[in-house]
Length: 361
Image (tube, rainbow, N blue to C red):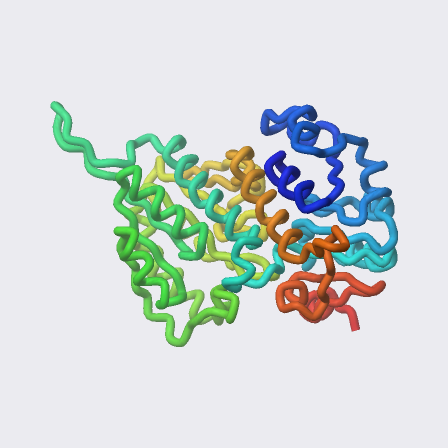
């Protein structure tokens, strides 16, 4: 949380406290928070006393037990892989709101933390690739001749992919893009990139705008179609993710071997398993001369802006459900937004999809 959101919440009538040192990594002092109206205290005291706790990453089991019974917890909780945490939160009668689960609707758009952070990840991926590449991205007319533009291939045209396309184009690269959803072709063209068409048969997207999982046969067709484009590319950026499931492996070792030495791959799906064979979380590896970047938390490379955006998303969620007379957030469990992102409530794991995925009867 940044001071601007603290001020916004205090103006609503909330009493806000923040953990001491919360802004250190983005060059914000505790004094900046007190000036915005927050109290500064130790983590243990804050967790025990708060009616609502806002966090970034999911809390530890120990921190979960420090929450007061009946409290509201808001954060990126990784619910599909956090059964132990959710069970502990339920046992504490904590109402946990997972920011990953906020519905992708017009009304909830201002609370959509995943889209906010994906924009930054797409931007950072291109900047990282440009820095690691031993070539320049734009075409240049020089006294020694014309330098051809680098070729960038973006796989997956969601929020991160579109931002990667836009950033690469602004830097002067020649950009190709592919997605299993034909509906995004117009968006690719609008950014000045070429849409790579591969006939996969029937594909589509979920009601929330995510790509549907391909069959093994479709995945094989996709890899074959992309192999030629990868071989011509100087930079490949993969962004393909499946909501609540491991990321699909779409760039094989053979495809990497077919790329030119000095080429760069940035795997944006690494935190959910990765799209590229050979990628490693939080590492950069070189395979046959090709650099594969698997760094997690790319938005953290621009932490000040990432914090500003995430803080605004959380603040908007709280404000949307704020009761001015009672001066607290009202948990309207029948509201469509809350129904979409509330994962524990009333002493149980309550979200149907989460219950199914983690095996709760």
